[in-house]
Image (cartoon, rainbow over all chains, first blue to last red; front, side, top):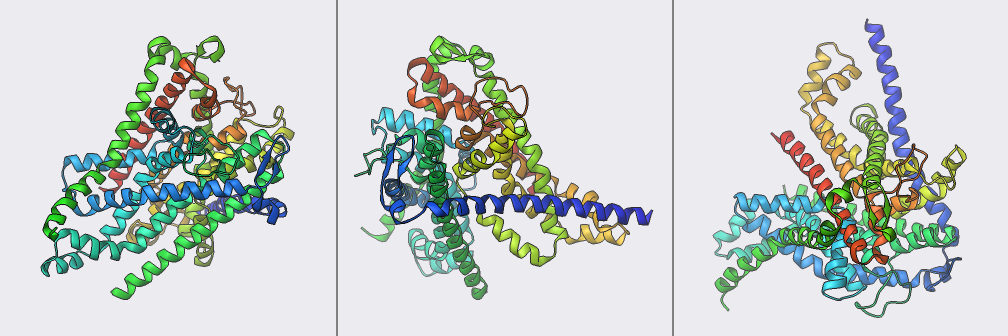
Length: 282
Length: 285
């Protein structure tokens, strides 16, 4: 009996190593594939000329890089104050009652709505009703709606992790609640807030479906928030679906992967610093 | 202005920010519903939901094939992803030496947030031709290709949540089982995994939500034919893909039906997420 159990264990652990190994290997292979296949097509010209369009997918990705920068800038400019404000309310002001419980629940639900549904919403409201047309502004507003629950939750968690004693000390010194929030809680929660903001930048860069239906997809160089545009992620989609230039699609994909890896590394190093700081405080 | 006035004002302003997500949710539900109304009135919910023909130019607006496509792809991808993720989770939580975990866990976490179009692209360039060689039709765009791409996408999510919930179990569970003479594997399989099942379920449900909502990667590898797939190698179309592919060119009833498609997705995801929140809550109890 004992021997049988040992044999079963050996078999099972073999399977587990197999499954885990496959899972990790597939993920790493996939990223390696994109970066290695894409890298040869990336050069100075590729990064600094706009796409010329057509079936051959001629040209580079400069206007897509500019569009991506525009979208990130406009989205974060609108999203950050809104998300932080909502987080301050949830962490500092909200009473624990049914209404707030319901709001919390709706934040959770909103976080799970598929991004294409946000795209539909943005198309109906920003593109059509508010007649911002297909533009960077429409795309950014759609992303603000999409990312709001995520940023709210992350920033709220950061604020909640600030020790109660710090708030009480400030209040005891005669500070108003607002002074406590702006001069004690937010500075102490800053690393967590910054992590959340960087994660949102990453998601803005990688999001494609809602921008595909709200930004118009023009490959021209955008000259303001009212002009249409095409982010890198959407460009990958166009190249893959409408041209034969798969090597250009892979090169754009490689640029995206590197951007996201850098973003994630940045997030990791900040949250590690935060941890070190907390340990030091104790 | 005195600091007390500022304090009073700011608490009002913060309240306004606080309800922003709630307002967005209401607006989304409201607008999707509003834009769906014309189609619900002229075509009817029943004919849209249970119709099997999608020919917008002939006023045929049945989306049942796509509901089926979305659900099938989600189920197949989870059938692939859940065992692999559970294996990876058990490996990292219990079996692998700490050095392996110290390398693998951050590596997997770095991959969270890789754009879905990148997954779709690799699916198109590397996976689909392989499937075409193995007996698929045409380009190899198929339910199988889409399911594999989705499985890879949701794998890190399910694996990391499962690993966390196995690690969160009290040490005494493991020690008790081992003290009774159980082997390490018996402990894992009969004690640890069953005890962590709510967390694992929550991870799987979260993965389901992401799978059903994925859009661009699906458009790239599933072939987008609005038909009932005859097998795993057959092409299909998802609800999300239907919206993305057609919205730019759609007007009138056609456009309105696409909003109904969004409404169906919205409701599907609400159901899945409520289930996931419930699973989490029970776990906390």
